[in-house]
Image 1 (cartoon, rainbow, N blue to C red):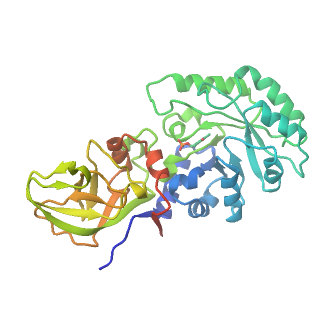
Image 2 (image 1 turned 180 degrees about the horizontal axis):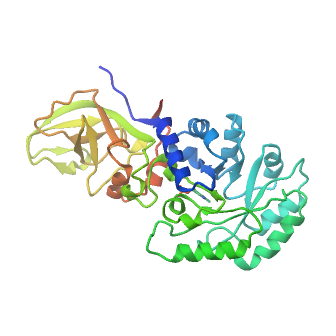
Image 3 (image 1 turned 30 degrees about the horizontal axis):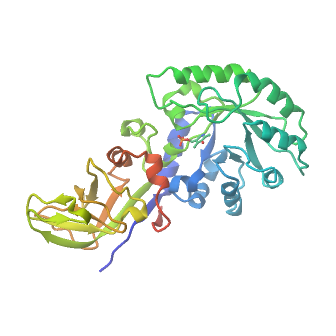
Amino acid sequence: MHVTPATARISSQALKHNLQCIKRKAPHSKVIAVVKANAYGHGVEFVSSAIENDVDGFGVARLEEALRLRSHGITKPILLLEGFFDDSALAIMAVNNIQTVVHNEEQLTALQHAKLPNKIKVWLKIDTGMHRLGIGLEQVERFYEVLKACENVDENIGFISHFSRADELDSNYTTLQLERFINAVKGRGERSIAASGGVLFWPESHLEWIRPGIIMYGISPDNNVNSTKDLKPVMTLISSLIAIRNLKKGEPVGYGGAWISERDTKIGIVAIGYGDGYPRDMPKGAPVLINGRRVPVVGHVSMDMLAVDLGPESHDKVGDEVTLWGENLPIEEIAEKSGMLTYELITKLTPRVLTEYVD
Ligand SMILES: *Cc1c(COP(=O)(O)O)cnc(C)c1O
């Protein structure tokens, strides 16, 4: 008997393919590859090494994530997308070539008062309508002048903003945000506003720098598989059958007897559960892939296992591989069924899930 437990199979070939597609879509833009949250659950060391030669820099959300890249030997620039959280971070950033977003007064003051061994590259974050991070349009002038005069700040100040509705193709809000951004920057430096949605759907937003995250991993930002037809899923989440049981018509399966079989059938038990990060309840029923066919998950997902209805004619065996999402089973479908975002599904996998790197 050989059983593979919950495993995320990660393909560097798919990753590189996706990056080439992204670069063809935005041929005049430089690329900040967004690898925050452990490269969206794909393993940041593997992902960053695989693509370092194909990108111009990396984007992360925490200083610790940036330092993890540096200790792994990554030398390309790294940008803190939310800026630094603590004045004491600046000295560490200066010696590690870590760039920062500046989005508030406190960060500006810290930069003015710091004593640093070398200059830091700053991206001024402008709020163009997301209303999450960023300075108001009326503050751009003042922040820019202060940064320009600050001896700790590299003279090439970049400008950055973020779309709130780039995945809504019929909304004019994205156009409005883009206009505000371009007018606020007034050609004073390099600009970046497009994340995955901007890269795919708003070519005029590509500007000098794009910041793709989810599409690098072959997943669509609008949960529509057609948006990313030419991309390949980088992660395939697999596990295996650990038992096959005969079940009589009318018998329930799992906690609470939440599912009752309407026929005599065979039930497969798969070694993955919510303790691995697989969603516990999907009212609309989720498919898994076994030996080339789709079968439904039945009953409640347990912490370590779930049950599938293999059907009375099944010839599946213990040890057979089961695909939960990825190749031939788009994660967008599981997101739709679970009411979760694809972004959530991939970042909620737990450390128990093994990682297998292929090609
Ligand atoms: C996460 C993030 C991105 C990447 O977003 P995707 O939708 O995954 O492409 C880009 N920019 C910023 C500021 C982010 O926080």
